[in-house]
Image (cartoon, rainbow, N blue to C red; front, side, top):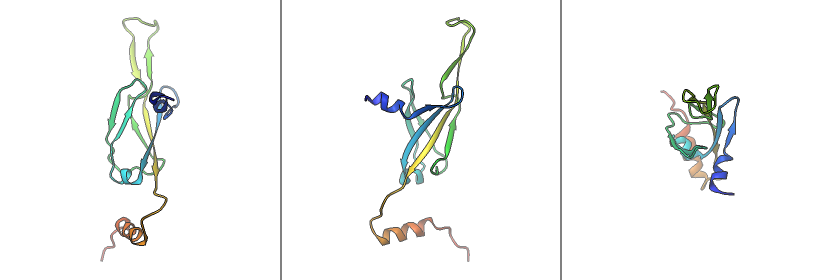
Length: 118
């Protein structure tokens, strides 16, 4: 399997000309809102900014980055206009299976617990 085939397997066609891209990321990357870098099916590189922490199964829609659809009646005519469907990035957040020790777990609990107002 080539790298291109591997990348293509992350894409799935959705209704019409829309695409779903499955993006696997670590919990650390999710908490830091790290950008998503992906290579499209037509070999363009996109860097998508993430503006909020993605939860497992959440979706970000990128308009105009799906499959190309040609809106013409005569293939190859000079007046043909190409538009694109949308790209749906589906987040698969991978949680750690174990932590370094009980103190590490406690630090995480404290850091992620909401602040209590006095």
